[in-house]
Image (cartoon, rainbow, N blue to C red):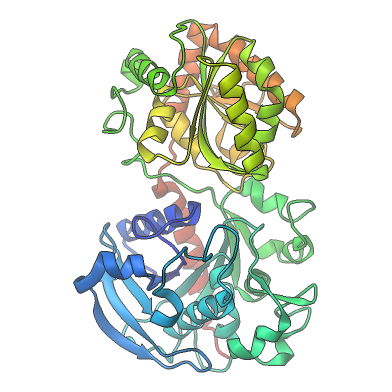
Length: 487
């Protein structure tokens, strides 16, 4: 059994901006169920304090100059995992987002806010911890905890082993070098083999440099980030540390995303009752104002409208896709140009192109359940979750062969040993390649036996967190079995 401190800047169901929160809510719970002793460390955002309120108790006080004084509060995540909350009102108890004061501007003191979070994580993972409990491993997540492995190497005696997980290398926590005094770090760390990164300080680069082990959220992404363009300037360091880098494919919450028990869809179904999926398609068409064209497949999209997600590729070939024929049901928001283009398509092709701008959790479930196929043309995708949701709901996926998408979607051309395909992959990030893959999907859809086989193959895949948790547990065990970390 491993004692683990899982340090993160967000976790469902308390606070979320992206996939990191899903991982932080699910992985610790799965590890606990495997018998490990896990604590989650989370900032004391206003939403966290308001949600947990009187349930929390003061466990310790932290005085870590030059940071403001803080407290460690104890509580429990809804799934039963013990929670440690870093309570520092000047840094976290404020209106606005977790990282941004509005949609365009980061909090100007983010370096201090997440510097304290990193420092607190390192203290709680070492001999100086004010808590009775001591972890064997400190698991840091993304740039917000990237300095924890650095603080852990400063003089202070025996410490826990450190693991850094990169959820998306595009976000690196970059600040000017003048922040070092405010972080309590010595200037001699501002060097190439320290925290320096192209003349600035990068929290993520620091974590990659100093962590004992590095993981990322899919095996293919672990290979991709060691090269341009997905290394985002860090490919040399990651390649140098390739022996310490492991890709572990994320899982999904198979209880929340279960078509046989989902309260958010029109009709529940399983692999043995797939005809009931048609009831969800009918409801999906009604919600998106699509015509009842029973022989025409419906393709679903649930996504941020962002360059990373490749939705501009869909915009470029949408008219050709609709002429296959096909209907499109798109849910999401983001880039104003992409949103404007989608609005134009919805206006030009009423009944064929349905658009809902914004995010709606219940509607996202209906898209997964009611669509005939799901589109994910991402330029890069560290892991991705929707392709897993889709397969679980009997919805084959059209996706670009990148990151976690290629690790979790089986194309018919790549299936081995009688393995049934679960989707259609394309390589080049072009509208032409996307259209060709969608055309293959439409041709396969016309073969009802093949389509049913693909649906059932996807529904049979194991995307549970138990699989991923077992791989993390093996990594922790290997680390905690090494000689103690002394500094």
